[in-house]
Image (tube, rainbow over all chains, first blue to last red; front, top):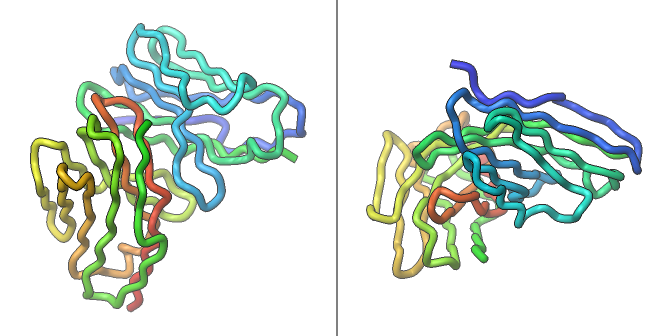
Length: 112
Length: 111
């Protein structure tokens, strides 16, 4: 079946602009996570949605970052007033009832 | 919060040899420990995972061991092949929450 998809695959933006990154989960997956991977680094947790519960935002690095998940399906990560240090690959992962998280291909964000 | 340390950061082996990557975690509440393989420019792919109610799990050439008392877990790859070359990440989570990742190990398998 279809896996996790993300769009756009690449995004180049100017410093100070806002960007929106989209994640389409595997159908039926109730949990959705956003991670960030900077060049040559590990993955850093950003935010976690589980069903209709309030999201766990404990990993968001600043108030310029926000995310929403509409209808328990598609999620959008928004970064306002982008900075050069926001340049990274943003990965979305989803999970059904078990433990395994399935990753999307990521969005490579470059802030110039 | 949870902290995961991973060693070594780079590992080079000859084809056919074994490779071992070790991770430690700090939060005793963590109960799920996956290992991901990430090839250059690709998404992380789960290769094996273990839950805290078992001490060892094996899948063909790959095995993972968990020592809950010492809070460490290891990935073992036997009979390595060039296609095993990639970056490997360990991770830990509690109660199906978010994963906390180690910083990765770049494995190179020389033919």
